[in-house]
Image 1 (spheres, one colour):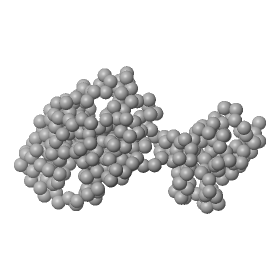
Image 2 (spheres, one colour):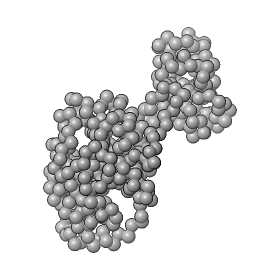
Image 3 (cartoon, helix red, strand yellow):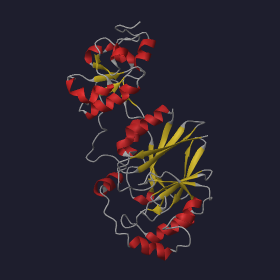
Image 4 (cartoon, one colour):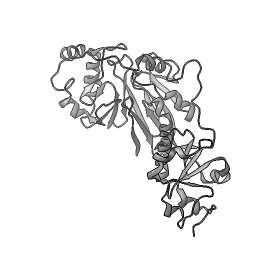
Length: 356
C-alpha cells in the first residue's frame, strides 16, 4: 500500500507530495518548500516514515526549495535533474533513472520545456505521475525564461506524459485555482493548450504571445535553488525555540509535554482558556494558571505579562491549540500548547487545584 499526502504552500501555490512504502516506512518528498520544512518534517515523523530523498521536478523560480532544510532535519538526500545545473545534490538524475523507496519506485522521465532540467516522476505502476510545471491542470508551465522552449515542452508532453495510461493521475507542482489533480485522459481531451488536435506550431505561437509578468521571487529563488535551498554565506539552520523541548505538529502548533510543564511551572505562565465553570469544575486547574476564556483571549491578550513563555491549556487540547495562534498573532513569540489538556493532565495523576 502506498502512503500518499498532497501538501500545499499558500504563498507560492506550490504542491508538495509525500510518498511512502507502507511495508518498510521508507519515503520520498517531491518539491518541498523552505518555509514548510517544519510542517513536512512533522508529518514524516507523525506517520512513522523514514525520508530517504527529496526530489525536485525542476529548479523553481517562485519559491525556495526545502531540500537542504529537510536534509538537516531528517538526514534525507537530495536528488534533481543533472540538466538543471544545480550544485549540492547527492544524486544527479538522468532520464530513465529510478528512485526506490522500500518496495515502491519512481521512474525519472526527462520532460524539458518549462526549463531545460524539468523531469516528471512516474510511479512504478503508472497510476500516478508528478509533472512539475510541465503539464498543469488545463494548462502548462511558461517557457519564456530559464532555457524555456515551447516546442520542447510540447514534445515532452505528447511523447512522455500523454503516452501514459489514460487513467494515470497527474499531479502538478502548482495550481492557482484550488484544483488538485487531473488525468492523462482529461488533459488529452480538455487541455486548451496541449490537448486535442493542437499542433506544435500552434502551441509555440500561443506561448510566445502570453506576455506574462516576471516571477516575483525569481531573483531570490533561482540562485537559492541552484544551491538546493542552502542559505547563502554559510548561514545555519533557522533557530528552534530553546525555552522548552517543544514538538512542532503537522497542524502548525508547538507542543510541550505535561511532565516538562509540571517540573517547570515556575518558569512559564499557564493560560487556561476554558470557561469559568470548567476552571472550577471537576477537572480542576493547574496550580498558578490564569483563567482567560478563549472567546475573550484576542481582546484581553494585552493583559498578559511578556516576561515568561506561555503554555495554553484547555479540556482536551483543541481550544488551547487555537489559543496559541491567537497569542502569536498578538505578538507573543514563545507559546506552546499542552496536548491532551486537563484530561491528560489528570489522567496521568498530576497535581491540580480544585476539582474532584
